[in-house]
Length: 308
Image (cartoon, rainbow, N blue to C red; front, side, top):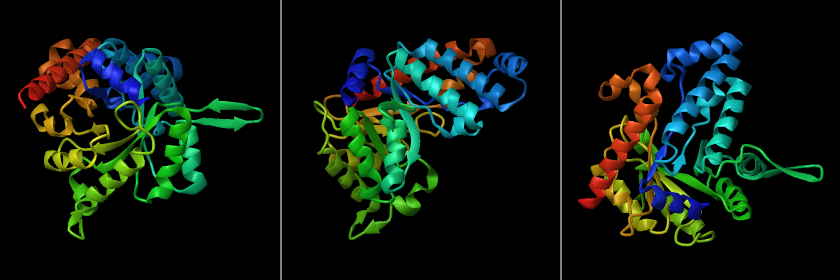
């Protein structure tokens, strides 16, 4: 699957992933009204609204981008109907040729980790059948419990030719409370990066590993360090746009081949119509506003890379 991700990036010339992280406050009123008229102000109504909202955005941007990243918590808040919307969103994006990165941030051990991996990347044994559950192409994984929590995912990735992105240096302000701690002269995130490179050496695609890393755009200096530690690792970079990251911050995440990183923007794209720069599109033009935001992001990143 890492090969497909790279193929999609080369085709679109856009190392961009759109974070499909819907909240009802982002969903235009006309979509909510229609969903509530059919299902009531219920979990089912909320799930229908976010599904239709997602579908509109995907229809508007799928030809511009290589991948999407739905954050499962935004769906889980609406219970089982929300998870149905998550599954419908993943399936629809894959039908459109997009790589789907399930942002699930799972981190457990043993049979529990294996069950998470099977549920999101693999196939469950049901009698004589093997049946895929959510079936994303990649998922995000928390490495805090060590190899016991990560290796079950790697095993399923090897079986299914899918991938993971391991949290290494996250974009949130308090990430340094643990991740920046110095141990024997090195930051903890450096040790995690070394482990990611080691895990990745066991499952390589043509040029990059199935085992990727998450490194926030808000920490470009750490990104520079980690790029050297993990030369064959694809880096998923959150924090662009709404969290303060911009194209000029991102150049060190890429290798000399122009690959090696994919930049995420969530509400900066999916709620673009609520921003002053795209307000002229209005609620009914929310999807077109998202498309314009993707194009602006693509241009920003391309300019930064050309100037490095």
